[in-house]
Amino acid sequence: MNQKKNKLDKVELNACFLNKKNPFELFKVWMAKAKKTEINDPNALALATADSKKQPSVRMVLLKGLTGKEFIFYTNLKSKKSHELIKNPKASMCFHWKSLRRQVRVDGMVKKVSKKIADQYFNSRPYGSRIGAWASIQSAPMQSRADLLKKIQEFKKKFPENRKVPRPPYWSGWALQPKEIEFWLDGENRIHERLKYKKFGSSWKKQILYP
Ligand SMILES: Cc1cc2nc3c(=O)[nH]c(=O)nc-3n(C[C@H](O)[C@H](O)[C@H](O)COP(=O)(O)O)c2cc1C
Image 1 (spheres, rainbow, N blue to C red):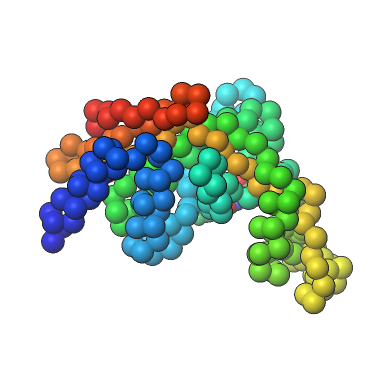
Image 2: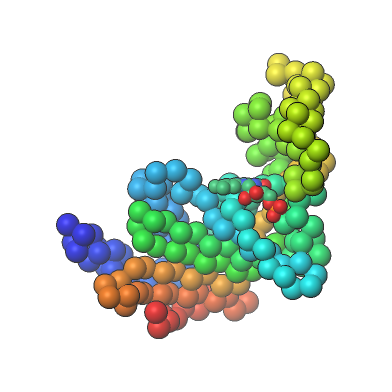
């Protein structure tokens, strides 16, 4: 069964290697597959940033937008990651789908999404998440959890559920425009398959890499 699945996967990768000029098309195929097989959060990715002393740091975020040119996630603009991205707008993303034994790496430059896009996404979030965005000074030290719970109650009073909750000015999205995207597919005896796309101007060039 597993062998059969592996063969199918290889055909899929090779076919994509031959046919897909744009890595976003291949990413969408892989993400659609992951949505069917991952227990939860197929859109989870590890996001690496680096501070002004070049110290990298990595944490998970959720992919909430894919435009064909950009990978978008949302966060607090006062968080550690945002501070780092403001000073050094380069980032690296890594998706790992255990159920498929696949990985996708995405490197590039980030910029903040427009206010309109951020508002649209913020308004689509559940009420509790919108209130949480107001109450949490993400990544700042907290005296006690009770302080946070108190702030949540205060913001619930300020923005009742039946009224519009505006987007906090310190909460928005980052869009990563990739320069490189690499697809990794598990192979027998660790003879994995790797396909890397690099962007030159407006077009993508592909190469396969040793595993
Ligand atoms: C599966 C998963 C998904 C997450 N998604 C997000 C997200 O989309 N945005 C976010 O700000 N934090 C998210 N977090 C929390 C971050 O990993 C992190 O704790 C937080 O953003 C603070 O990171 P920072 O101090 O490096 O800025 C997620 C955590 C996990 C485990």
